[in-house]
Length: 303
Length: 192
Image 1 (cartoon, chains in turn green, yellow):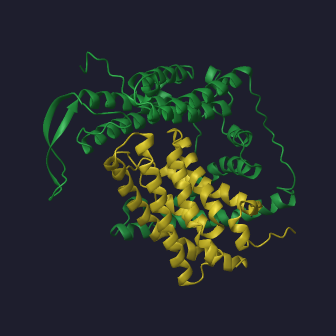
Image 2 (cartoon, chains in turn purple, red):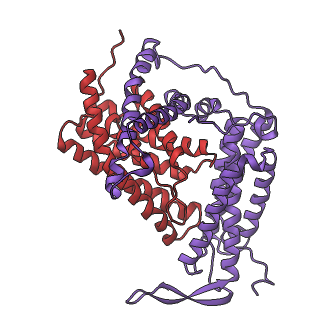
Image 3 (cartoon, one colour):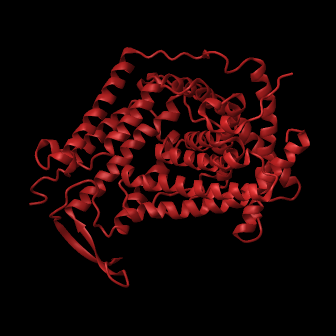
């Protein structure tokens, strides 16, 4: 069993972006879009995220697996959350006069014994808008998240984290972990084959939950203990080469372009602006400064 | 012949005390956790957030208990990051931080045991801190989704309960087995 990093070597605008730019864009966008449930802000973010994803030129067959997982996750997340809240929760917005379309018979929490009983499932303009906003938000974050492993060489992550301010030793540990990954998975595969030769079948573990868990030990223990013992040689080799004494230099150097600097500045500026607007929205209960705290539903939909 | 310094209590807790040994174990732990998580990521628990069954959770618990809280922090955090990265699922910072907390809190046991688990009391201490780590770490990851994914409390709880239960079962059963096996291996190599 081999491990394949999902990185695909290609020349696209997203591939040409510095690894630090992609990480900053991801975190700045994520932390910005989670601060509001305003439909129009999230829609603009969704459009920008779609454009960013389109610039990575990833094919559906290459990203089918993560997208299947993400779309399933988002569907279950928003629908499950809707039913668990009986359609009544719209996060982060003022909701003094919901425009209810339907009330369906349902079960919900009550404020009196037996605390669970018949309660209406509310379908309102606000809750439907919130469903759509939630879906756009999560899918737009995924559009920044998914290109990251496909467009960034694994060897760039260590030096990228170093350039973002992580200490040398931690950044080197990231680099070293990428090197250990294929060995760890290969050792697991070898151990599984060796145990199978001794009659151990992972698919046919007997016993209850506890028994089955204990029977996982013949898989885990040899891999973990064997790796730790093998790491002693690496530790000795690094100490002999005076690792950790003095400032570390890196084989790979990241060279940000002017475009990377512009994108980073833009991302941080937008994040700060949205955060300030969000904070001001708590002090100004109406007007343009309160915009992030309303859903922005047009008046003809919610008269 | 290189001589490795024995880890002390102060060095285990201090971030400045991270030496060559800790760096290598961090990397190894993260690789093991990421690799084994990748192999079991397809096993999903029924929940709002499609949380996966993860026997590999014992790895940040073990590495934290034996090598210290910072090794546990890195193993949990970056291990989860690697697992999601190589699966192609992307980066979910709150779950990475939650897994990092699991390893860090499990590593608090090392303050008392100094990484030695040749007595029952020490193993029990490791189990207690492992349980605290799982509950706090998974709790942080699941309930931060109230803010990140705009779930409500019930939705976040539907992520927390199956994930925490699953991790507690796998972690608390496999951790003492690994600790005893590690003790035996160290005794054999003369490093106890």
